[in-house]
Image (cartoon, rainbow, N blue to C red; front, side, top):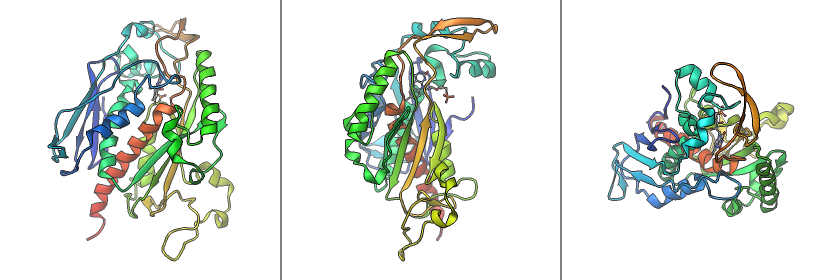
Length: 354
Ligand SMILES: Cc1cc2nc3c(=O)[nH]c(=O)nc-3n(C[C@H](O)[C@H](O)[C@H](O)COP(=O)(O)O)c2cc1C
């Protein structure tokens, strides 16, 4: 299986399956001398962990990170940072019903076809449990980027959409509600809605909005490695992501160029920011903002029709502990992937000019 690494200079490789011994990663290329706050890494993991509220999977797992290398006396040494999170609460029996059949819209069928064999327990490598390793690496990247501020929040659940722009919202409320919505009133509606979906044994999608502030000018490598292209790749690599748009995104197509253009102020900042902080693939110093769309995930706790390995029609019943809506737990994953891109491009930008 190729494709388990991300980044050029700040490079993360992850390993592990949902019901294996552990998941983890190696970060290659992290500069020496960063004072690492290990508590902050654990706090980021706690934002992603299962069982944190009534509207996420009830799998209870502490997700404690162990760091094996690359850190000495509280500082990064410049050598590979190896880390792992042990799996401690697997119920592999819950997955015996999908050993020989395929959950519609999950990765079961394509894994079997591609590899001829699959670890079906908990979805194996296709499980979003893999993203715990991204969150650890992202928390380290955030500490490298101390001046750059990355904030994500839930802006839509099903048809419930927060119509306010990020600059009209109070980011301090995001962590005070289980949905991680940046508006308390909307958070209550979203929470109730997710609970009703859960009661039906169904799932629902949502949108995570991410804002990156205090970005220096000059991050991004034209032509193929444009900053927004790498952010898009990072976000689209997250499980269950179906869409990515930055700046004016798809709404921009309905505007004329004369309306859409971001006029300059004398200091080079712009009066509007429809470009989303990136022009020509390079950060322009304005805020970067983007939306990431998550589908309603595949595992519904209802009876459903599917096929088995022999291609025969079977009816099966979804079971196990699953997320009715993944966006509350996806918020720290989106931030982590953004931090990995920004860390990598910050190091690459050191070769911009003499
Ligand atoms: C935080 C998070 C939690 C997830 N939890 C579940 C889950 O409980 N059940 C499920 O079927 N899919 C879940 N997924 C999505 C699957 O991992 C994903 O749909 C699957 O790997 C197939 O990949 P694709 O949807 O990107 O095509 C979750 C995704 C994320 C980001």
